[in-house]
Length: 351
Image (cartoon, rainbow, N blue to C red; front, side, top):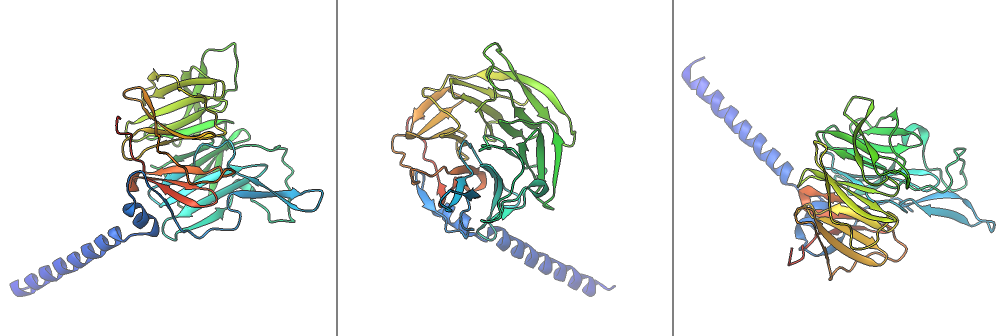
């Protein structure tokens, strides 16, 4: 090949590479309905995301009343959170009220949908109710978790931990888990806080499932049971918070090496029935949303301080039980119930 031909080939390759880079850049910066709305929001602002959704997204059909009227139950009572997967741009939540219902929001399509649950646990349509499992009314509590590194969504039920692979949509399961609260600690594994109250005990085990291990192992102990407890991983601080709830105001944070730090007790009563904890993606503050009475508190684990957000005015109705998940790359929190709502937090001035 002569010099002129070689030079032409090099220039052509550079031009093609430049075009490919520009195309990739345009693809990376193309805004979705979610990202556009999030970027337009100001701190302290709420906004509604107009997303397509199935009828009765947050409810399951459970039969008929004596009058023949259809009976539906909300899937998010006694629930603390959903999960956001940044790689696929999805909000995921497995709800439960007599039946499981697995819902997901896709940023790409701006649409909610109902996904198949594990091993045929699907939600039947009205008139087709049949569920032989003895579940009672049931609540999902804190049994949703996400491994963002490997793209695995976890839900714990009936003595097993079910794992949903986000790439191929398949389910698998292993024995063990929690009837109360699980949470994933990136780089460490899935943690399960499962014990019920026992006044004779002072320490309650926190078990660990490492990726691909298939075996639960003891990790540390907590000073309160897992009954109605709340756990949340903080990516800003690389720590996990545990809040006792119910008849205890105890709070601890956990580092990846197993070190526990006892924090100041909550200055208010809280239960998983009407409280949710979300990490503010911009500051790392723990935002504690109380549905009744409607209020919002910030907790700074570094200074061990709680502050009430006095200008908090939630936009949801009295009978709604919205499920939240933080979206770190957009700096917002998504809530879903009757509407899909976005919230961008404005920290208290004295934080």
